[in-house]
Structure formats: C-alpha cells, structure tokens
Image (cartoon, rainbow, N blue to C red; front, side, top):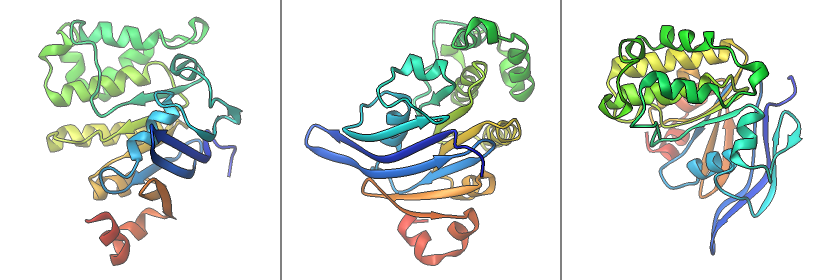
Length: 237
C-alpha cells in the first residue's frame, strides 16, 4: 500500500474531564474512501475535528503525508491539503454561490490555483451552476450541502473529511453527492466519511472502521458491515 495521506496514532482527546477519544489509530491512503461508522455520540465527529485542527488532542499524533501536523492550525492544514466539510455546512449565507467557490479557491497557494476547477464543480453539481448568482441563504438544504463540498474541493485538497453528507436530503441530491465522492476517489484523493446511511457508505467505501465509546473496535471490508449480523447489531442497523 502507498504512503498514507492521513494517519492517526494513539490519538486521545479530552473535553475537560471527559475522555472522548481513547487511543484512536486510523489510516487513509491516496485514492481510498474510508468510512468511520458507529452510533451517535461515540466520537466520530470529534475524530474529524481533531484531524481538521478544530479540537486539540491531549496526546497522540496526526500525520498528513507523513508530516506531523498535530499542533498545526486549521488554516495551515488547509494549505497542506486537508479539507473538512462539517455536518452543519458553514457556507457564507450572505455571499453568492460563485463567491463561496472563489473563497474556497483562495485556500490554495496562489501558484497552484486553477479557476477551471470551479467549472468542474458546476459539472458535478449542475444545481449550483443554475444558482451561481444566488445567495447562499436562499439555497435548499441539498444545494447548501453541494456548495459546502464543492467549496472544499476547489481548494484542490489531497484529503477530504466529510461528516454526514446525506442527512435530511432528497435521494436525487444524495446520488449526486456520492457520485462526487467516487470522482474524488478516482482523482487520487483520500476521503474520510462519516455516514449513517450504511448501504450508501459501504457501496462507496474501500475500508470501514467501527467506533464505540471513543475507540476503534473493528477495521473491516465494507462487505462485512452488510453481512455480519453481530456487527450490524453493534451499529444498530
């Protein structure tokens, strides 16, 4: 297997006295979709926030392309090629779709910026092309989710963290988003995905990690998630 894009080693995170992540080990390779599964409240989103620099680990290390970024700022991590799409989207509601994408483009160092990637995002998400002059606040929930993903991708990240992309969305929008995830994989990017729609997640994933009470308890092929009754019981699916 090629050099990992992202690697967590014995990662621990505390929220005051609460020990939220307990020695998490996790790897994402280039061109690989890895799905982090588990019931609500087990630490999945905290794992992504620690990777993105939104939460400071109490111990352990975070590597991006073999470089330790455990103490790097979120902006520095973005410059190094890590992008995060949180579950609350966080688009700029007072800016147009086009302006949101232009801001995403500026996450890339000037020498590496390519405005053609915006047109590529419009080809992946045709709804955004139709809405390019409209403000973020008037978009539907699905359009906001597409914009959040597209804004992350125009920065040309090496790895993308996506938290619950399909939650509350129409099936047609979900299909577009998962088609985009396949395109990311084909382009050689690494993707770490949190997704409650187990069938959708396992259809696109190369590997799965199952988390319980802040620990990784299973690493497996996606097919096992769908066929192992004991594992499905642990996931309550």
